Image (cartoon, rainbow, N blue to C red):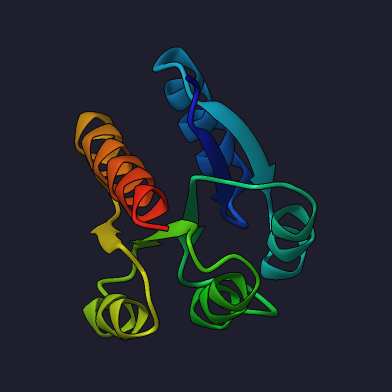
Length: 128
């Protein structure tokens, strides 16, 4: 079974690099370049995990996270934060994020984190 991921980041080079890496690892990837676009994807499709950048123009990652959790409570969200904003990562955890990862990160660590989030989501579904 392929896990479905939504990658949300306003930096197109980051999206291109990450989606290439994650496709190689066998994930099914959709991409969005803003919080608003991410919400359109989440309303149309069921994702196992959303990789969500914290700092984006317009709707930021925390606001987007809250909306995703309202729309799809069982979807796990991993916050990606680059500007040493540990506070935002912690705020994301309080708002329901599965975890947060500091940029730059090791792609293998990210894959391990995605796999843990997918397993966590499957366990929650079994309990339903």
